[in-house]
Image 1 (cartoon, rainbow, N blue to C red):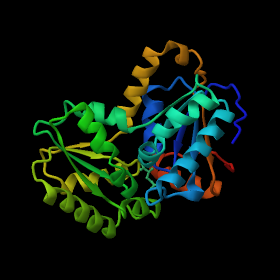
Image 2: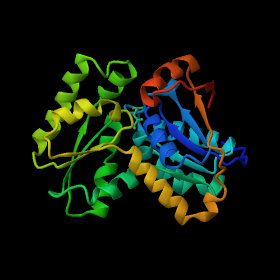
Image 3: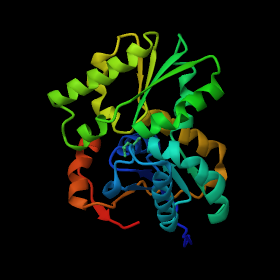
Image 4: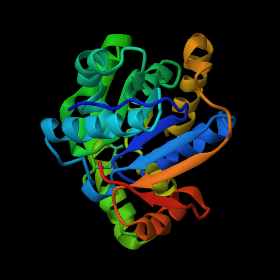
Length: 278
Ligand code: DGL
């Protein structure tokens, strides 16, 4: 695949669908000065149940698309894409496409932030089937904190519940309780719980109610935003190339009206959306 690069300067934020809006919201709160392009591959979401090869191929298409729209820096806001595609894109594709461009994920910054959030050293990770099966959190936690124990739980019903406007319903109560109980029955010493999927902050209140009070329930938006701020401080050559118009373009591979409707749940405000094909 040949990428036709262009120079813009917006920061690209990619997610399989709407979930990355929970990350974008925090990026824009912490770093409001920059321009952003948000791309949701809603037509092909969810990614959580897809194979490595497919997630990699779709994610690479999205990264190429954002590069072609001028982004020099792309954040994979999706945990599933970060787990299954980031490393290959960084190691194999970027050197071929343009070694000066960067693609960053959400797993590493989340794990870095865990160091001072757990006293017992037993950390819970809740994510999509794909993220949990990839073992990416386990490996990253093992690398940074060899004394920690990671306990994971896949929550395959949580994304469809959020996407289908059922986050406030009783069905959501049932499935939140089900997966939280399944996690804590594996190890009751967990005292830090990572919501390792961009959709899960929408279920935060329900999850919080089911989890023991002394457990720190960790969402990623603020962590990823602080980590990007730190990255840009350490990489002035990249920071200088990020344009500062404070704008955000929203793009979806699905129907824009559908996107606008659901985006409201994540952003609490209406947005103008463009349809794109990858
Ligand atoms: N955005 C994905 C993640 O953070 C979840 C949605 C999906 O399965 O596509 O893992």
